[in-house]
Image 1 (tube, rainbow, N blue to C red):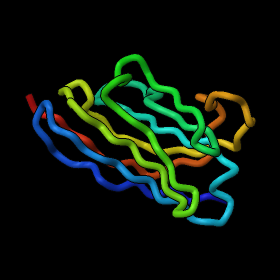
Image 2 (tube, one colour):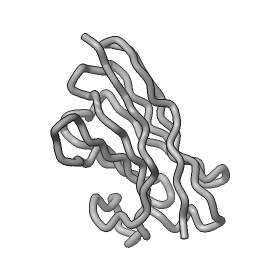
Image 3 (cartoon, rainbow, N blue to C red):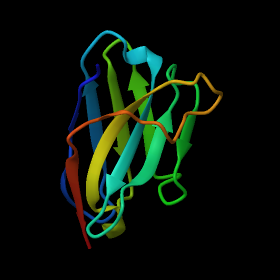
Length: 125
């Protein structure tokens, strides 16, 4: 069982940066690919970024590529999402999630079984 807790959300102006952090309980953090997803007002939840169990590979949604960076620290059982050049359309509740890693070369974007409670990010224009 994995428990995930996000932090770092807030209200910022367009062009600003935020860093989200996801802390995991348990001692098996390194067996999971980690992902960040978001759900904007009136929208379905969508994939944002993911990272393999060992941090060797990352994947991003086209809408955030070049602006967001996902990272992890297995020693601390954390996964972060650095968000730069934020836009109003980035406004959403952001969730971190864990999926038992299939040990592929790139991180999975499906099969996430553990989810955090979410953290609100609001970007004003």
